[in-house]
Length: 362
Image 1 (cartoon, rainbow, N blue to C red):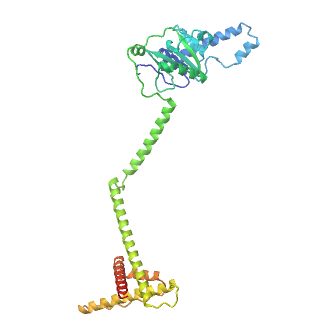
Image 2 (image 1 turned 180 degrees about the vertical axis):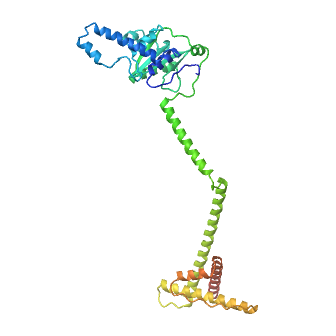
Image 3 (image 1 turned 90 degrees about the vertical axis):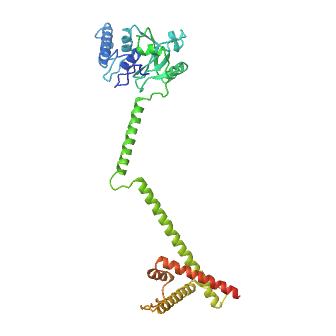
C-alpha cells in the first residue's frame, strides 16, 4: 500500500488530486490547470463572438463570472480535466451513456474511473490486479474487491455522482508493477480526513485531562494510593468497632430497663387491669438507677474503710427531676462509656438473676 501514490485533500484542489492519483504522480499543478482553464475560456469567447460581438448572447456571456471553467477556490470543470488527460492520450466516456451501455463492458475489465458529485472529483483505479478508491478525502487508498466494484459504482450513481470511464493507456507506475506480482490485504478501512482530525482532537483532549489528573495526584501534600487505602481501611474498622460498642451499650441498658420495670411491677400491687403509664415507668427507672448508684457508692466506701485508705466520701448524686434523658447525660459526664457499659452489664445480669430466683420461689 505504501507504493500507491495518494494525494490528500488541500483546499478545493480535488481536480488536481484526482488527476495525479489517476496518473500516479505529481503531473499537474494548480498553475497548469489554470492555464488550461483560461485557454478554454478564450476559445469559448471566440466562438460566441462569431455570432457578433453586439449580439445579446455575447453580452450575456461577458457578464458572467470571469471563468466558466475554474473559480478562485480551486475548482476546475470537466472540460479542464478532459483536456488535461488528452495530453496523455486519454479520453473520458460517460459511464451511463447509451453509447457505453450498448458495449456491455464489465466494470472490472476497465482500468479506471473518474467520479464527480457537485464540485468534488476523485479516482477509482485498478493497480495490478486489484481496485482502489483513491479519493483525496480519505486518509489513504481504500481496497475494493472485484465483486464489490459494480455495487460500489451503482451506489455512487444512486447518490447522484457522474461517473466517467477513462479510455487509453495509462502511464507506467511503480505501484502497478509491484501489485502485478503480489496482492495486498487491508485490515482497516481508511477514514475520512475530517473523522480522523476529530478523533485526534478527542485523543488530545483526553490526554490533556489525564495529564492534569496525574499532575494533581503527584502534587505536594497528596498521599500515595497505598497509603490512602490503608487509611480508609483503618478508619472503616474504627467506625465498625465504635458502632459495635454503642450497640452493646444500648442493648445492655435496654435489658436493664426492661428488668427493672418487671421487678418494680412485681413488687407493686396492681390496682387495675391497665398497664402503667410512660410517666410512671420513667419515674421507676429513675428510682432504680438512683438506688443502684447509691449501692455502688456504699460498696466503694466499705472497700475504702477496709483498706484504711483516707479519702473523701462520695456523695450520692441528686435525683434527676427532668427526664430519663437528663439522667443519661449526668451519668455520661460522671462515667466513661466503658464504665457505663460495665454498670449496665452488671445491672442486666443482676436483674436476670433476680427474675430467675423469683420464678424459682414460685
